Image 1 (tube, rainbow, N blue to C red):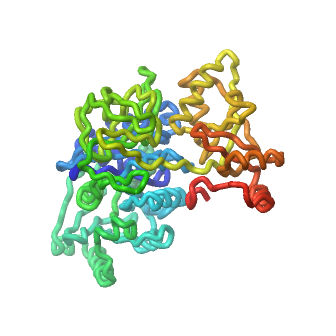
Image 2: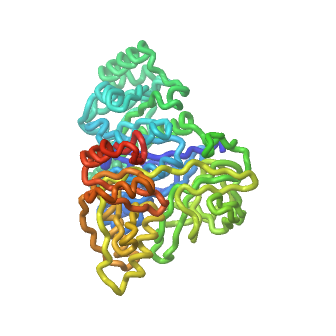
Image 3: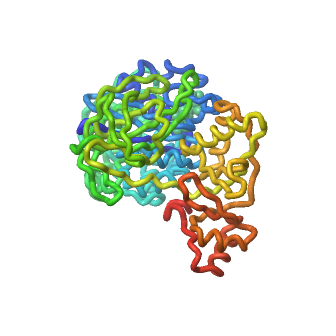
Length: 519
Ligand code: G4P
């Protein structure tokens, strides 16, 4: 398990997450040539994306875990959705990660989407490594970018490499640890591994001249203020090591990948719901963080992804499913690489495994052997968008119900039912509006259930209880719905109405759903 690095790449759409993912795979030898696995036109349509809609729109909506090895290290790369809306899926994926790489566009710095993702990392205590991408193009100066990270997300940036030349006239980077200069070759084609030219300080000074001297002066200033890399504040989420590069031309990719071996943490004991850590050597335990149906249209299957948290996983073993207390056979366990599956014989803490035909496993479920454990539930977000779903074809009601239930279990959307209207007209609740498009698309394409989604007046949700539901009956603008996990959610048309009701009924429970993150 010391060889494991389980991490996610997070970024604002277009900053270069897909490109960097692909380049990691290229450098690790998991793919032979970037772009070769996919036609250039639908470049984003292969390895980690598989849905038709993703291919059409060129965005990554669902997430996959990619496993690859590099220099004796086993990487489990969790792919987070890259669309503009913040998605609950990202939060769940981060529940399985030990570390995250934040990709920033050198011309844009920290963008709003990155801020929300950062909040999630902070809430989960995930250390962040920053990669400033697109240095081959004009952009902000390195000092502006560092300032941006510090002022916007409050992490102290610690440059591990330092750029020579400005964005757009980029000459390479100096590795602050060794002093070596890595020369950027503009003409290098990005599809295959770029040969790297590493020069000593003297040779670099002679070759590059003024830009190199300026960069060295800047490094001296950085050294003088003592911003050298130190593992402790990084792991505590106080600092972020920063790397500069250009993923599209492969520059800086190897340095970053190697830094992930050196800097990123290997798995640590995970706390159970009482806060007691389960040692990595304890018998097998795992946490289900993602459920996905119909990944392979030819199979119509349902895969539950879990992260091994302790012990050794062996194919065919039987674990206990903590929620039901029943034995659960792990016969059909796979590791995924895009649509390809490889059967797994054994796995260790940090590894991500998909179990095929996992009908009973739900998000947040724990599995264990011998010594019982229940890991804390993965909290769901306060939904901010609410639509009524109606089945458009009465002959397809069964498909409609099955599809809604499946998307609910996968957490694609939250499904809220009214005691009187039940399954007929459930409310679909989401954190970002794109979740509705995904739900509608999948209901039609995968389940054959054409659906009409109509807006509601609701804008705010709060958790309540039986007494709250009775009290709210008197208020015609608000209604109470039951979510499939049993939670009762009171929906209000506005924060103002919520606050007014609360002021009149201070005893009624109206609780924010995830404190600190939902607003
Ligand atoms: P995302 O997953 O974060 O959304 O970003 P993605 O990797 O898809 O990259 C978005 C665009 O930025 C792509 O251009 C990609 O080629 C480009 N890009 C990525 N890294 C770099 C870099 O280091 N330098 C420069 N100059 N561009 C970079 P596109 O036009 O959308 O696609 P394509 O036509 O290039 O394939």
